[in-house]
Image 1 (cartoon, rainbow, N blue to C red):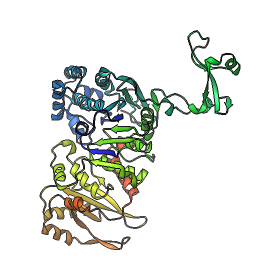
Image 2 (image 1 turned 90 degrees about the vertical axis):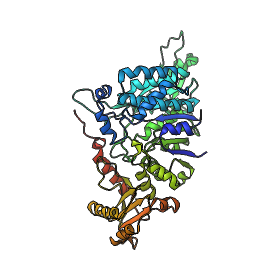
Image 3 (image 1 turned 45 degrees about the horizontal axis):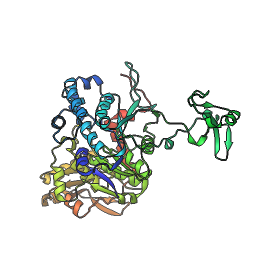
Image 4 (image 1 turned 180 degrees about the vertical axis):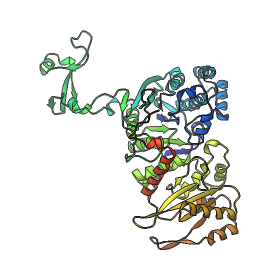
Length: 527
């Protein structure tokens, strides 16, 4: 069975395409802006919500989707929701009012209900969140899992030494929360696969050795035994009380507890992709190793930059990933190809990606605010084989929807800018793009259009002239017009040699301009 990567709203994908009881483990890290003031969330101040929602999809607003979800839960006409869930959401309404926090909880309720449905009876669920809303989320998950024979297993604190936020008005917060639930009583938990390595002082306690390696003698507690709990004993005591002693071998390691000291992704990390909410692979390795086995199926319904997917692939699990932005889909494909080679892509089925003109038009005409720029992203990233940088800066984009870099010599590179149009186009669009190209210091500009170009547009582009690429020994038109039809039906792609490392550095620099606090791993921030 091929791995599945879905581009679309995870609620729609879960309901339409993921069958009952087919998933062994689900981990989700829903977007939520943890740096906002808790009192503002709780007291339902909405202007900031709407402003931040335009910058990144990590802020929740009360809108038509929230209203529809609220009504769906209260009506429960399809019987999807437990009585406890319906009563809980109804009870939270007069407390939280119709604001960002309730909108967030409704969204998670809708999706977690479907996740519970698709989990196998032996399946496990991890929800990654922060202390801002973890207490509310636990109530939601209790109402879904515990009311149907499942269990709350752990609240895990992921602790990190850098990042977070330090304040002069409170204790600095440097941990996230993972809520761990099981759908049934018989769930997978491989405690022996996630043992923690002993410290040097801990290793020194393993004073004895046999054919199986170094070990320490541990007395076992049983009713009526003189031993209280587990503790070291001597070889002499082992001889006289063999039934109360076991040999603890060094290779077994220390049992994991519910706080995990795992370093976050920092500026120097080889893992860094420039994705704002990227989590370290070590964190997901622990989740996947503990709660699944080889060939199990892992679901990440908010797969973002694909850390869960990359870990699942490396640990020989099957996987299903879902994300609402094509930028994430593109990044995941690029990440897998870079880390594991092109052959890994042959075992992935892409779902929801435009494959003909009708589906491309449908994407271009979507009214959903969350995906208002998705057509542009899909067009640019598809044409550049996932190597371009999408312009996500706040405010006006200056006529530039994306950029890419191409090699001009062994040590030098130059810029390409992209503009995408889904509506009517004319000669003036080409003239303006050329002006934008010059302003941006780009050698080339690509105009991607859903509509067929006019002869005047082609003449305007030709009049701009060409660029001599010394490395390739050929000329390229400085303004190139590419149609969506050519991309889909002729598989037309950018054919200029590009530098992936240059692209990655540029993407990181752009993200640093957008969200500089994500790149400040050495200095502490004070309110």
